[in-house]
Length: 496
Ligand code: SF4
Image (tube, rainbow, N blue to C red):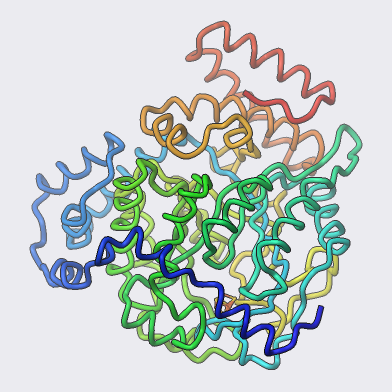
């Protein structure tokens, strides 16, 4: 697995393809710093009627303009904030109902040629033990994730390095999809692998598409270019702000139409990052007719050997974090909203009515699922806030009235990109999802749930079945009931 420094330097020189930035940039990029700064300086303390007009637009599942989201950010009245929180809940219910999708992160390699100031994997952190999982090791991880815990969906994470390039990722995708672990009633397998990796060329993204990638996730970290350039050294690949900014344009061109964007909140003013995320969503909608499939809101957490991760003056407190989640839900109403186990159980629980996805049984150590020893700071990218098992999380969700969905049908039925955007906007995708959530939850309860979780899970599944019976056409109810019976008899992976 050794590559000498000279070969690595050659590889680095070839990663960024300038004409794959210029072709989308049209002379200037879509993050207009001057406009953003002017919006941030506004102090209008908007009236309730002005706020309510904007909320109506969110409720009609339309993306807000930069001025509109900026207006919402200026609200000072706590009563209006409560109202915004309630509307954010309503928006989520309208598009995603009471479903929360769960996944597990799989950290496959921490080799990295970059030196991001806030990250424990940075090249100059010589105390970080460097590991890249072999295919056999990945297989062992999947046996646990899919065969013992019951995950169906992963986000695979790799640092940027020639040894974890696109060919490694493609091989890992094939490996992950090939594992099928027997369970007492059926089998466990991973049915959707999302990838969080470095920006790639159109050609490399095409390889991921062919290998069956779910969502391609790249976070801009910070949209504020001067800050970006300060914390990502300019002699590294990641120092190139625009290569990163346009990676989702390249993904769309390569046919990878489920893309996930995000910002690392805490590197710069959180209001600026929200403007950045909204501008990014509008740009993708305008250019391709497809906004982001998901938006993630990771908050800067302490990382090994990173002063910035501990002392950043922009670190976000809990109160502002709640506002961030509400504002994004309102600004891009159709998108999935991911909050991870970086956050504490308390914050996660509070955000369930607004968010759509979370991870559980999370281990961010390379090879950490198979090796059950405790996570050391020196071996992971940052510290976790919630280390509860999937079983505990599913139980909590059920107790709070949310059904955990293990559905991965969307991309396997071709409901991705523009198709899924339109279905989400008109509420139709939600209908498929409701049925698939019931089937996959039944499957998970029978295969993996503890007796306590099963008990509370049965109640929520009965409630969901009742709702379908009362609101779906009878032909669809019959189809669901027949599939539901089959799952109970041990048939697996049925979906609409
Ligand atoms: S944030 Fe990503 S690119 Fe930067 S050092 Fe960490 S792993 Fe490497």
